[in-house]
Structure formats: structure tokens, C-alpha cells
Amino acid sequence: MVLAAGFGKRMLPLTQSMPKPMVKVDGVTLIDRVLDRLALAGAKRAVVNVHYCGGVLIEHLKGRRSPRIEISDERDVLLDTGGGVVRALPMLGARPFFLVNSDSIWIEGTSPNLSRLAAAYDESRMDALLLLAPTAGALGYAGAGDFAIGPEGKLIKRGERETAPFVYAGASILHPRLFADAPHGAFSLLRSFEKAEAQSRLFGLQLDGMWMHVGTPDAIRDAEDAIRKSSE
Image (cartoon, rainbow, N blue to C red; front, side):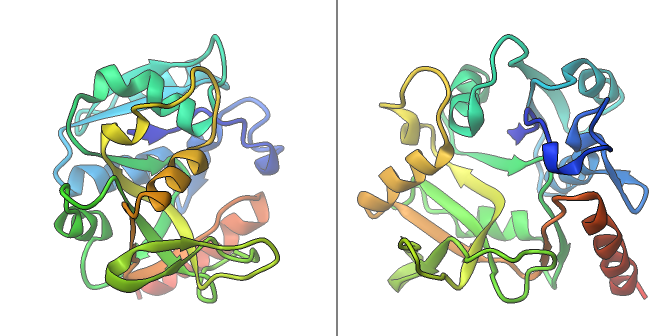
């Protein structure tokens, strides 16, 4: 599943008449970058949720053949990240699935990171396996981080007024059972991650490469410079 329903307000004025996933970085839309990575990882089908300027995104995605696109339409109500997943669960099925933010962008290291996630995921132990980037090396990121990695890869959420060595890179593998008692309506995925952590079923994998936080128009230029330098 690809989360693509947000407003992208920090990306204004680029998002005045189009959704953030349609913003281009080095000539390629953010949504296509994500879908290309999913296709490379072997995904045959991708559920994409839409809300703001949903029609623009739906029209664009009609041209995709790999992976095959299914739309989870949230134009009636914005459900936040967790609520969006819950609405799409009937389309996703009963097996673990990739969940990727439509604006997640990184430069690969020696191995594709989504394939590394799939290889590391253990259904018997994990309800969620998150891709994490080192806070210090993330391009364009100035936050305090999200998690520390404990024994066996289990994640520990950053405490209030603390800093953490890793930031969630916007890609994960989740099991549908994570949402067994989820509320109706809008809620954040953070609630589900906290539940998994409390049950010792939240794990992390360090990203191989460089993660880029492309949250504003100015950040696009820095990301494009990094992409071009990586291909030299």
C-alpha cells in the first residue's frame, strides 16, 4: 500500500492544484519513484489511497502497469495514516504487506532496501518491521529522531525531550493483525506502532544508503543534487 492522501501543505505553492505525490524530483514524480521501487521488490499490485486532488492522482496512475494499481478512495473523508490503512484492509488481504509513504525517497546502497525488508521480516515475531534511517545522516531532516534499536532489532520509541539515533524512513512491512482492535475513523499509524512496541513486536531495519526528507520546495533541489552526485 502507498499512502498518498495528504494535503502536502509544506510543499505549497507546488501543491496548490496537485497532490504532493505528483511533485517531481529529478524529473520523476514522487509516487512513481515509490511504485518503481515496489515493482523492483516484486510487488504485483499496489493499493494507493487518495484524498486531496484525488482525481489528478487517479488519472496519472491509469498509465501504470507494474505494479497494477487499485485505488482506496478517501475523498469523502480524510482518515489519517492508520485510518487509511484500515479502510484499505479488505483490498490488502490477510497477508503481510509493504506500506510506503508516497513521499519516501532515498538513494539505494548496495542492496535494494524494500527487498532487504522482505528478507528480514519474520511473521512469527513481527507485527511491524520499519525501515529506519540514521538521524544524523538524513538529508534535509532536522528532527530529534523516532526510535532506538534494541536487542534483536526491537524498537524503542524516543521519549519526550529526548533524541533518538534513527528516524522512520516511511517504509515498512505490516501484518493485518496489527489493526485487529483499531478505532473507526481517522487515527495515526503511531498508535499502531506503539501497540506493537508494547507487545515486543515492533522491529526495525537500518536503511542501506541515504534517506532524504523532501518536505518543502527548497528541499527538492538538495535531493536532486544528491541523486545526481550518486550517479556520477
